[in-house]
Structures are given as C-alpha cells and as structure tokens.
Image (cartoon, rainbow, N blue to C red; front, top):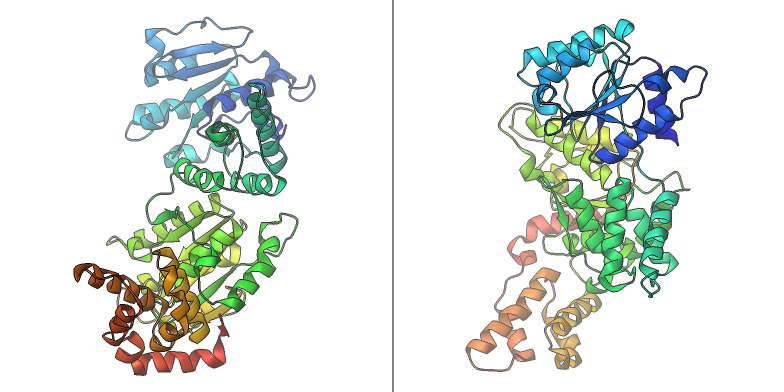
Length: 502
C-alpha cells in the first residue's frame, strides 16, 4: 500500500514534524500504525521499537498498540492540555511517534505551544521523536513551516471504488436481496465518486443501495449532491441539482452532435487529451443556460455554477483568491461540468475596477493551461466584444458556438416542449401557426408567451387556447425588435466567426 510505504519512509527519515490533512482520522491512525509494524529490519527497522501515542484534548495522551510505553499507558489530566502534553513529550526518553489530533486551534496566537513544538522538532537528533499533526486543515506559523513536511492520504482508485461497491452490495445481498445495477451506471457511479476518501465512498454507496436495493441512474444526482456537500464547495460555486436533458432543449443540433462525439473522450480515463470546454454566445433568452445544464445531463456529470459576481471582494487580492479556491474546489468535484454564466460580467476587457478583472483573467488563464483534472467548462456570454481575445483562442476552449434566434422548425419544437409540459398537448396541431407568429422570439420569450396566456385565460375564466397565445405574442415586442441594432450586429459578427449551434 503506497500510503503505508510513504509515511514509513518519512518516519524512517527522521522527519520531526509531519502534517497530515484529512477528515478520515481513523484511516490516518491505521496507516501510521501499519507503517511502523511493517517496517523492514533494514533501513527502517528502528521504527518497530517506537511506540505510537495519540493525543486528543478530550482523552489526553493514549498508547496505541503494544510495546514500551515510557510510563504513559493511560490518559491523565496532566497530559490533556496542549502545553502540558508537549512538555511531557520533551521529557520522554524513549523515541516515540506522537499523533496530535485536531491540534490546529492551538497553533494560532499561542507562542508557547509553537515554541514547544519547535523545541521537540529541533531536538530530533537526540530524542528521535516524530510528531504527526492530523486534522482536516492545518496552517503552520512561519517558524515551523521549514522544519515540517506535508503528507496526504491517497484517494481510492477506480478499482478500489468498485471493490467498495461490491462489498456493500454483498452485505446487502446477505439480507436476501440481490442489488440491481448495470455496467454503464456502475461506471458512472465510480467516476462520480472519485476524489472522496474511502470512508466517504463507502457511506455514499451504502446510502444509494439502501434506498431501493439498487444502483440506478436516479441515484447519481443524489450522490453528486452529497459529494458536493462533503467537499464543502458551497460559496461562489453552487451545485445545480436539476440538470436538463437535451430533450428539453429545442434545436442546437450541431452542438448536440459535437458533445455526443466527445463524451467518451472526456469520461474515459485512458484518453489523455480531453475536451476542455465550449463558449456559448448568443442572444439573451436563446437557451444558453439551459444548454449548459443539458451538457451535464447528457454526460451524467455533476454541474457546478461559478458566480463571477460573488467573486468580488473589497479587499485587495481577495477576489483572485476566491477564484483560485473556486477552481480548485471544482477540480476536487471532477469529473464535472463547470458552468461560467455571463462570463463577461467578471472579466470584461475594459473595466475601472483597479485591475481586479485583469488579475481574475490571469488566474483563469493559468488554470485553463495547467489543470489536470477533468473539468469541462461551459462559458456563456451575451456580449463577445467585452471578452478579452486571449480567452477566446483555441486551446483555452475547444469551440465557440453561437445560439441564434430559433428558426421556424425549432420554434415548433420549443412550443411543443412547453405546451406538453403544461398539459396543453391538444394545441400541438397548431404548431405551424404558433411558430409563424413567434418569428424573432427567443426560446425564453416563447415560453413566457404561453405562461402569460395561461394566466390571462384563468383570470378571464377561459380555457387557454391558440388564440390566447397568439394574442400574447402580438402584444409582445421581442428583444430582437427592442434591441434590433445590437442584436443584428451580434448575429452578423457570429456568422463568420462562430459555429452555429443549430
């Protein structure tokens, strides 16, 4: 096991202070104990003679396993307080490995505690003690950072995740019922559980099985949401639980074909060059946001929405830090789709914000060039002229699609989707009439005309029909009329520079 070997090498190399950030404390303790018990009698043989102690503020210093105790076998009041236990460790004559659990609150603003840790570390050549700090988050003061080493427990591989799934399925089958699943769903489940600890993987698999004795496609959104909550990604990145299917999106035929041809390349671990993302440019209300959601639904991946408006902070440097943390957290959620909505509002090329937009752009470009985890970006924008050219070049994103105002046949599809959704299937015979009356309308405007017709009909005690919808369409000036010059310019620009999504 790699973790056991690596932590054993660090302990055998007389590393005085090791930082181990993890939520899985039990696995950290087991790994340390196994590293000492499995140490060879050659270069790491001395590890076997070193007892392991665990300290917590509730239980004090407690001996783990067997071997010499140097007078410490049970917790005592004198060893419960942080300063007291460190003073005690300084006096211990036998070399030991001491695991300090949740010690992070005592590192900030406590110079005596920091100095005691430094004293023990600097005297390592004499006492041969190794201190291992285990916590969910550890920030060392500068005076300790140069004498410490960080260690991270490896996340389970795909094979190990599948093993956990089989183990949980076997436990469930012992109750007399076989777990139902298919290979495609299991593969997607494994993919979506990457990046979690062994304990968290087991917990989510168990919850998926006990719900109905099966692992089905309906379990994937719940697993993704639970993973999001476990990783504590809430903030400027939000989890979009409801992802649309492309059956709910009218048109976008070329975009659908493009995505279908690249799905396997993105989800298959054996393929190195993965799709990076797309830019969806278009008229407001044309369905860019719905298309972004549909990408995640089509690929069966979690969808994260990055709110550029929430990134901004009045303190210098905080906005860039927010973006870097958001992108790092998205990588932990991978494989996933990261939806950057109305991107131009966060990194406009012309801005009087003191350079914040430029610094945000620099952080985003660096991440796009260096990211190693499968995060597919779907960026949406209404105003391409506000975006910097370096963001748009090939290599940053794979393609720029233009979502135009829907043509007649696509308007029919959009009307059919929204009429069926509202129980007005009987009106579909009139789709050509409705589509002709809605020329120049966006998908959002078509939906709103149906909603308004329903409201008006109810208020007048009528049954909503084609005439009511036609009346709403006639009373509405679509955006293509209100902002005709701007939208006409955008459409003309996109005809020669973008791939049409329809």
